[in-house]
Length: 121
Image (cartoon, rainbow, N blue to C red; front, side, top):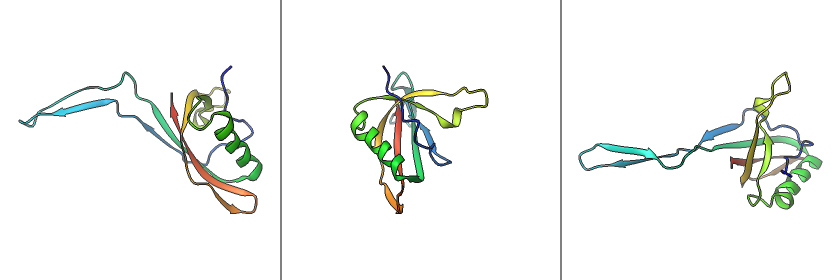
């Protein structure tokens, strides 16, 4: 059974970043010309998600998910892209893994802020 991102955690703050992996190689020649080709068969997306002032309970749930359930980047999981949710209940579900856990700060009593990076599998 596929692992799901915890639904008890509030969606990340807006805006969040998404970038596409460059899947090309360019070779430059002495005469200044270039030759290019695909390096990979597909380009994976990478999201940087940020949470501002999530309650301590949600922070602990997220950190437990990261460190115990998926063991940082060791296991992939399904994440619902919150930008894709529409009024009809449709949403893009992407298989991702955590490729970076940023610094988390306890900015107010029982409230945490920080980032994680997800990369498409």
